[in-house]
Length: 391
Image (spheres, rainbow, N blue to C red):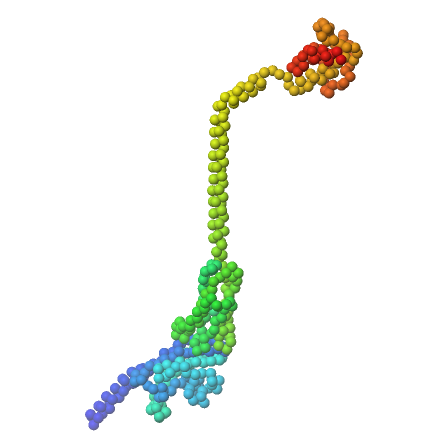
């Protein structure tokens, strides 16, 4: 009796010790919080582990229910046990045989915030559907954050594009429904090049990315590019950017004027050097000619004529007019036989008749005919005066 009693106590103690260990060996990994776009969809990543050998999918039953009420089932194979407002909106994406319990919820409503927990049931055999083990992971549940509107895509690009060089613009958006990822479209043609990528950035959150590559032209300067993200159930959001194109001739408008200026300066310098050489050659020729005998005689002759006394042109004209204006009105006058003392008399004693032809100048007439006649000695001699006087 004592031995049996001791054996029972030992078995109870062993069961008490091993029971928590076995119960803790079934674990589930579920994202605690996720964003969910209203009227779109959400995918809740879920995985579990157990201490048994690999279990077939036919022996496993996956259940999702509300955390505080296990009888409020949102997903089960038997759809009659699912809450009416969740029927047709939930499905298991993961394979339970692969320890994947991922859940998808479509047409998200405002009251689908959860929290939702996962529970697994193990059937006795593949043919016996009665379950003998049931594990609920109420401590690892997901809660959904309702988004009233779709998130806006994000644009990443360089500030300035260069004409004729490739320009890259990246459009990306974060979402939580990889089963129905959003589509990204561009406002301009994508014939130059388009690359798309879809990846999980961290558990439950995915990024859809589209990379646009194009060759900007002058007409693209200050133009706008829009990236539009369309989510499940045709919800859209967009982001717009401006393209600033740096023209390639911006460099030419500096280089070309500089080259033209330098070329002009070089041409002008060559011209100046040519002209200077030409004038120097001419000056040398003139200097060589100055030493000739002919040039020396020419300079000597100019000096003699310029130094000698001679009447000016005005004096010559005045002497010629004086001869005509002094002609007497009456009988002939012979200047050659007139005594000198008579000619030296004062103007008051002499009566000289007024000339027939007026003098072209208004200067007073000279009283001394001899002085007037002497003014023209360079052009007329005494015989000529006698001839004019006898008229």
